[in-house]
Structure formats: C-alpha cells, structure tokens
Length: 417
Image (cartoon, rainbow, N blue to C red):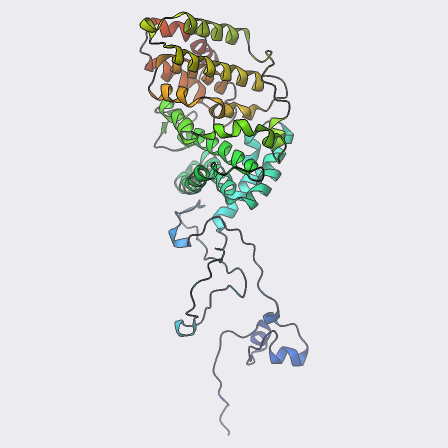
C-alpha cells in the first residue's frame, strides 16, 4: 500500500480550505483552490474593524480601564487590517522591519463602553434643555472624532459617571477617568496657545468638561470625600481652587467669543444676555449691594483694601452678577454656571488662593448659585459645603459674618444637599 503523501502543515490557510480539510496554497488575492472552484476566498476579504486612536501608547502602558468585575477580561488589541495585522507566525517568520510611525493603536474595548455610556446616559446630565442635550450627544462627539483631546474629556466624564452610579466599580472606573483626564489636561495646556476658528469649539468644550471633572471627582473618589448619599467634600475651598488653577489662562476665550458664537457649539451661547437684571432674586441683589458697599467704603488701613484690590473685588462681583443674570432666567443654559472661571481675573484667583476674607465671601455668593443647580450629580453638595467651609475659614469675624448672612441663610434653607 503506497504511503500517504506528506505535506507541511500550515495554520494560515483560507477559511474555505480549512472547512474542506484540504491543503491551501495561500495564494493572493485568492487561493488556487477557491479560484478553480470559483468560490469566494477569505484571503480576498480583508478584515475590517472599527478603530479610533485616543493615544499613541501601547496597551501595556495604559492604566487599568473600567471593568465589570474582577473576572472581566481585557481583550487583546484587534489588528486594523490585514496589512497592519501583527503576523501570528513563529518569531522566525516575523518581519524585522521597524514599526510604522503612523500605525494607529487598536481600540480599547473598555473605552468603547465609556463612549457608549456617554452617548446613552452621561450627556443627559450635562444640560437640561433638549437641544443642548442633543448637542452634547451628537455634535460634541463628532468634533471629538477630529480632536482626540475632546474625546479624552468625554471618556473621563463618562468613567466618573459610571463610578457615581455603580459604587462596586469605582476603583477601575476612577482609574480610567484619571487616565483620560490627565491626557486631556496636558494637551489642553499646550493647545490654548494655538487657538484657531477651527479648533476653538473643541478646546472650549474640553475645558468645560474638565471643569465638570474637577467638580465631580471629589464627590466620587473615596480619597476626597466621606458619606454615601451626599458625599462630604473634605476641603471644598481647596478643591474648587483646583478648578480655577487648572484652567488658569482660559480667559483667552473671552476676546474670541465671536468665533464660538459662529462655531459648531454656538447653541451654548444662544439667548445669553448678561445685561438683563431679572435673573437675580431680591435677596441676592441686596447681598451683592451690601458687599459692594463694604468694599467701596472701607479704608485700606482698616481692611487691607487698597485701590487695586478694590478694583479686583469689584470686577469679580461684576462678573458674578453677569453670570447670575445669564443662568437664572427662563430657558437659559444652566451649564453656563461653569463659565465663571473663564470670566474672573487672575488677580482675584490669587487673592482667593491666599484665603483673603473678601475673596472668600465672594466665593460663597458663587456657591449659592452652584447650590441652585444641585440636581446635576457632579454639583450635588458643592454649594452648601463651600459656604460652610468659607464660614470656617473666616473664623467668625463679625465684619465678614455680616457679609455672609445671605449665603448662610440660603445654605440653611436648602437643607442637606
């Protein structure tokens, strides 16, 4: 009986030959067997996958992403095409050529979950108006596909939202949030020196989401808060200073407002009129007037209020009143409550960092505005806790406590929040 003809086995034959248990000559674009039988060959159908590059680092350099549990598998990267696919043959058969500098790292499946969660849940928590919610759901992600810096901000907020909703997943989700936030923040700092009409929408949206992140993080991270239903921020004034210091320099948007109003996110700036005085309550108007009167009438010797410092405080109050009028009127964009860091002067930020009493009292008035929007999960508890922290910081001095009557009254009126 003649011996069976031998052949070298290969694990790289086409799917059709494997199914028929016959040797494949691995011809391209179609193997010989499929050509003779006029069958479609898998070699002629390049693998198609969806790829989005968020960073040019290898998978082993990434922090652990948001997982479903300890048994969740982190899948291996998927090749982008047959041309870019890593050769699965033995090391001796692998190409020794250097990696392509333009190679796009394959998608991280954990990031896909974050994007999915953002598109179907998180975006709703960024605005109340339906039109703005749709902008955050469609326009912003479309911009993010062109500007990865914005995509990183989107994914960081989505990860924090998941951590907020599912406490059992906090460690992994917070790790993902930090990873994406760090990339976005580092990139933004450099990009603010190169704003153009083309990228200004992406950069402004990114800076807005970074503000949301810095507000949300202390409420979600066990290292910065205590409590369950309403987390108690350990150092509210210190934490809000991070909002301001991280975004120091974003005043560059102010002279470029016309670009934003004509850009892709113009809906954010519709019906914004800071000159309307109907947004402030009588209590707010009276408290601001009392505060401004104190600044105008106190002497430098008594209260360390030099003329330049008075100008700084007056400008801060003016910008805060403008903000109040923008967000406390019907059909306004409530998210504009986050725009105060863009409006304030750097000198006020410096005085606030020094814990100057008047600067802190002005901050307490901003905190009342924050507390008015505590239905946002990333703002819940901030307003009242800031006001109480300011009260502790000024040490019960009667001069400052008289200026704190309205903020403290609003904090007590709103109860535990």
